[in-house]
Amino acid sequence: MTEKQRVSRRSLLKTGLGVAAAAGFPTIVPATVFGQTAPSNRINIGAIGVGRISREHDLPAIRKYESARIVAVCDLDSNRVESAKTLVNGFYAKDGSPYNGVKGYGDYRELLANKDIDAVVISTPDHQHAVLAVTAVRAGKDVYLQKPASLTIAEGRYMADAVKASGRIFQIGSQQRSWKQFHRACELVRNGRIGEVTHVEIGLPGDPSGPEAPPMPVPPNLNYDAWLGSTPLVYYTEMRVHPQQGFGRPGWLRCEQFGAGMITGWGAHHIDTAHWGMNTELTGPVEIWGTAEFPAHGLWNVHGKFKTEGRYANGMTMSISGDYLNGIKFIGTKGWIFVTRDGMASSTDPGARYEGQPLVASDPKILDSAIGPNEIHLYQSDEHHANWLDCVRSRKEPAAPVEIAHRACTTCLLHHMAMKAKRHLYWDPVKERFPHDDEANAMLSRPQRAPYGYR
Image (cartoon, rainbow, N blue to C red; front, side, top):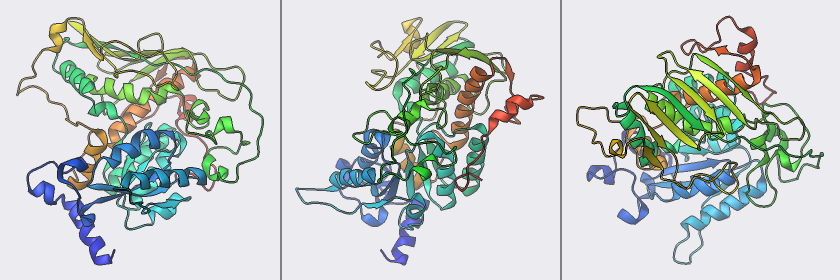
């Protein structure tokens, strides 16, 4: 592609003009609707981190839309790079003809330097999220970032400020905002169908403990030092990273060095939904407390069984525990609404599979209530990746922008801090500090191992 063509394509994306938009149709449509979209009009996508979530969720979702094309994949495991290239090339092979247009990278900085790439989907372990997102927007790329937004509150704020300063389009992978039952539940709650919300219950499982795991040689296909990133240098063992055979649930999800456990894993989804219904998307609790069990031994050390509580400035309270059904229950002065996913847990996630209806209420008539034209109508998105791609073209704000992502993740991390502190914590959501509490404020960030830090 010539520089003139590249500038023309970028101008088209930024203005949101194109054949589909000019015809009055939605910008992002499945490939089967209009057929081949001109390559000069397509959004070129790079995928950073191509493990389980990328292969099972992000890559298949993006490939549905002819107006976008995955042109590059990147991972610190070279075996996964080659596997992803094969997978994505297979997406675009037609009529038995092979396709080999996907470029592989072992260093995300080289991918971001490619001016033909317009946007990136980041599906790495949690501890890499914030630094990759910041680097990507500063390189001029729009970003779809898997949740949670960050490993710490400090780096989450750093990321949110960098995204806003860049003017790039950012979507967090809180796809429940694009699921009909969650949208419906929150719209009913926001319009007073259960009266004033007084309390919200969120059901989240904990993670099991694991065995000890002795040191192993680092596989030659893995850049382990870069994989650890800004976190401390520790010995390699497969249980700490990801399977070398297959794409099962990776061990890093159960190591606090790289994340906080299910409180940010599922919690980033459910707390975001709760905030949507509570109308607290841009704030957070002012008081947090609770207890949790942590493994006494073994490699995996994230929380197990727990119960944490939060109180908001408007008086609403929130409880989070595995003792509740996996989902969100809004409790008001005139009834309640419970919402969850269809077919709750995957075979590799902890927690029981939910078999009931995904949306229920204390009175079935609540669910039949029509939202009037003068009532609150929440942001409508029918598919999360499509919404992001639409916004890449239109430059409008997506369903789950960066500040909302940061605030939901902050609340997750506050509940995790309460587990650790074993006492009541008092939070100022405006200043994003614990007033007069140096011990708690020390938990807002972690030391950054050079040269991988986010500053």
